[in-house]
Image (cartoon, each protein chain N blue to C red):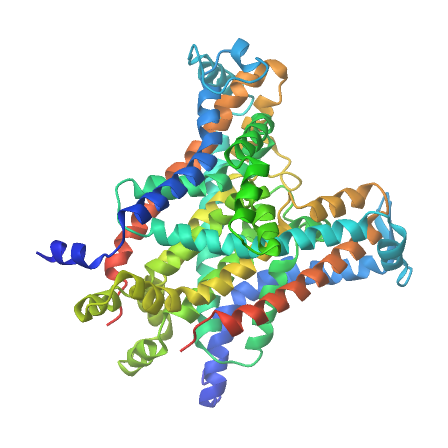
Length: 295
Length: 286
């Protein structure tokens, strides 16, 4: 069989599609179609009947219920958004710092990396469901309060003549130090992978040229890993917004079966989706202007 | 000789070292504490488990919890080995598919130009934003439509199209793989697949090793939940979960099971990370 002659660009295009297609098929089946279905559900009332379900279109009623009737939706949403915005810079800085330290050669490095990855193991799946976790969490909270004994810490910071707004931020972050360390586990790994992908010859050249460690960090390490800052920022936002332990995700989940029914919870999910999108766009804009080095 | 040269160059003060050490130590203590607690719990006899307030360290360590767990596992209706092989099958197939399809797509999206590429890129980030919990019902409908309810495919195939891996790999390829390298390979007559497999994948090895950890973690926790009903197709976490939920008296067995559930990912992590170290010396681009 002879194939018709194709232009070079078309050929390249086809190859691109060939490589993307296995993934795209799955993507359509398990994401895009469900998403469209959710949009349909959000615009209708869904009733479970013996043969399956029936839907009656109700226009924007569900959105109205979510935004103006339900007393908890808007406060929960704003709360979640604010908490996440506070966490992002803290998680980014913390995980970058830890990754740089863990990337150095020292004895017990794997163990140290493991320790910072532990929160992921401990908080996921079956381990998290088992009851001991409650006791562990209590122990953790007490632990954190003990280590960073509240009031003294604040007065110490204010004593350093730092601007109050900054102190306020630090205190809020310290309050959330547990969640921040937990959320840093995967970003640390991503940064580590980024650090390890830097070609070692760059450092060799730097050594030959007689550059200090400080300069090496700012002139090689930081610029080359900076694209990972954006990757991580997006990951952190998404991870915190979609984790099953997120307040809003739980709220929507509960709503599916109890209060408003599936239509309303689909509307809530879409509104939530839109607000995540807005925050993501904002962060991408800020980060890509300021931090990321591109060739 | 080389060693001494390096030592001179590192101009970091002892105080700074100490500060970093203390900081790391505090963070490490914070995250390691629950693990220490879980280990010590697994060796506690029943009467110590119910002490209030809970004791951090075990006083009379015993292996009774593990003995009980293994006895219960031996008595289960379906042999334990079946649950274990189910888990292995789901993890291996799910991980391999996710890695292969994801990296292939990532390569095309990162290093090729074709119509609709920007749209696909945007869709991928969009898909990440949607909480999986929210899509549960439509996903169930899709899988039911495909006739995969109560088969392994119901959990394996969705893992293949998880976008997180694709997203990570694409970003690493964007940042780390120079286009000149691919051009020169093309001039030498390398096929696209050969470039993908022999050049791009080795360069981003740290990235996909990291992805393996994340995917393993995800698949390891799966209980099959709403998709798999047949007892003989259920994965291991489900079986352990059932044993533990047998009542209050199973508290001891529960801590032993929790420890086993933690140990496996820890071992995978350690092996995986030791592989990353090797790539450090080989990933240089000349």
